[in-house]
Image: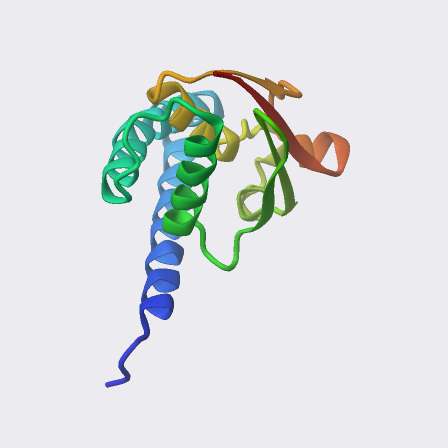
Length: 165
């Protein structure tokens, strides 16, 4: 049997987790409809984010996130933990108290297109990220506010998040 490197094992684990997430969404929308699937997906994401953010914060020994520098470290730690290579996006800190995300290729968009529901899908990707900030009690404003899928409606997807510390 082949021995996997830590990177290969992480990539396989993240892919399996995202497949589970997609299959859960698919069966939920088939059984209960798209409105319920979106609502339940966001509820599950919020619950996950509460546990996930605190686990990563503790694992990386970051302490209270009370400065922008600590937020940068937490954001890097979060994505080091949960991002797979197939997730093609960037995040930068272009100025003090500002975080910019640019989704170059969206696996959730591709999955929703495959199951034929992209026109009714409400983005769970950014809901997860913003839920991390909510759980940590951070004050922020994310723009643009999007209902649905920005990649579908505008052909691009991004968020600017401005924080108050």
